[in-house]
Structure formats: C-alpha cells, structure tokens
Amino acid sequence: TLCHEAAAAVLRLAPSKFWHYSRVLFEHQKEFFDVNVVKETRNETYRRLAKLAGGIVGVSDERVYGLLEIPDKPGEDGALNVGNGVTDDLKVMVKVNRLMGVHVTPTVLFNGVVENSISSSFTGEQWEEWLEKNIK
Image (cartoon, rainbow, N blue to C red; front, side):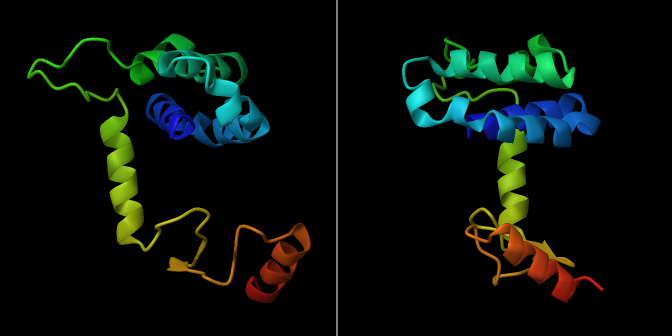
C-alpha cells in the first residue's frame, strides 16, 4: 500500500510522470518488500519512496513526501487514524475499481471487460499468444 500511495502522490503532482514512476517502482520493488522495510518507520519508507520520485522521475521529493507523511498528532476532531494527503485518492481508486469488477491484482480488462483467462502466472510467451489471438 505504501508504494501505491507514493504512486498516487506522483499521479496527483505530475500525472505525466505516473507511468515512468510506476516503472521505476517495479525496478526497485525489492527495496520495499517486507524484510527491507520492517526496521524503519512508515514515514521513513515514505521518505525513500519520495526520494525515488525526486531522484529518478524528476518530481519534487519534498512535495511527494508532503502528501505521504503521516502526522504524529491527532486530527482536529481527535481522530487517531488521520491518513495522509492521498488517503482519499486511494479510497476513490479502490471504489472505482470495485465497481468495474476489479477485486484483486492483477486484473486485466480488455475493451473494458474483465478478462478472467489471464492470471498472474502468465509467462511472456502466454502473453504473446493471448495478444496475437485477441488483437487483430
């Protein structure tokens, strides 16, 4: 979820950089697996994700971090789960996806319809075969 939030922050700040940042996240994904973040705070992980956006994608890492940082004080109403600057964005994305039938990832849509024959275990060859058969 932290990586998704970072991508949402980039999407909000620089929509044209979203896909580039997504590619960079995939290239650096192991740096954010559980065993590599377990000894740092959530905000420390956010800081690293923001630096990745700033250093590689060219989006201001301070602005990205500003959207990601979790405050250490309750909200004005006393709320303790205050989220961050992209919490509501992520909630909307999840709601929209659920309305479209997306409940797990990966879910592939082809011409706007969920394609259940594709699974996360698809190999490169299977993708090529599927695309050859379905894209004319």
